[in-house]
Image (tube, rainbow, N blue to C red; front, side, top):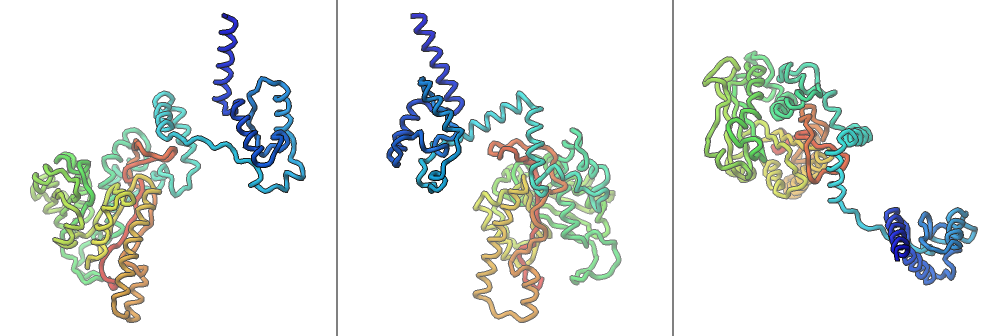
Length: 430
């Protein structure tokens, strides 16, 4: 009885090893033989490697094993080479991959073997197209910036733990600063008393910003607001003091906490009316609303609009907002950030689709264009939206990696890691 029990245990262990190795058992071989016979093969051992390939036959018959070994090594004969793929038996269908199990295994590996995980991440990052590599962001940061001071700018060029933490806190302010340089460069001009090409004077004005799709991350408390936008006010006040006297930021979105809205406008100046930052006032207001409803009620009064980590590609609720922006009489730069460049490209497809659809509809019902109007339309790509810069790595994205439950294995996610710029709305002449 003990010998019998030992023999059964050995057989069970052998079967488990074969299953773990992906080998066929006898039952599978018999089923395969029956299927092959139905396909017109009387002897499945004569069909060559196309059917059996790398599978082993778990049989106690030694002769069958020798036959299997010989078959797996032989070259297909002339008859087999002329056979069409439909004449060969289909391979065994693989079971579906358990994505949750894979993610759990990867998460466990990151905890138990962080060095191995880091090496795998580095290898995956090196294999990426350079356009998608967020690790290249430090190399894109200039040595000097028109708005961002040298000390915080240096943090975006470094990878030390202290610098990584600093970039996570400064990413929103730095991203907006670079957007102002690209989209509103006239704010950096010295006060000369002359007129702009657009006809407006150089008198000090108010810079109005709309931060769209906000939630508790930006406006949970007064401290949260100051941490996110306080640096921006200090930097802009120092760099644009000859052009600006006031900065007005509105944080908008259906997920803005009602408590934040009830708090009312928050001043971000160190002291009321302080002149040491070059501004007379700098306020931030939180408004719980859908942005397209806001635009229909009040119109677009912003000089620039920004959507941080918006996920436009994944939420249909963004489409009415994009349509409302495209239909506004005033053309406004719209800056969109994302966790990865791939997601930013998906966002771009949605924006372009909405703008092109509105443009096509307008052209069908519009009047015949003059030569000048047609040329102006062509200069904007013939669309209600013009891409100012395509989806790319954001030099001022956070350097802190973001843990995401739905993350694609091998892809790195960071807040504001990628971005793009659009000009939405306005007439073609603008």
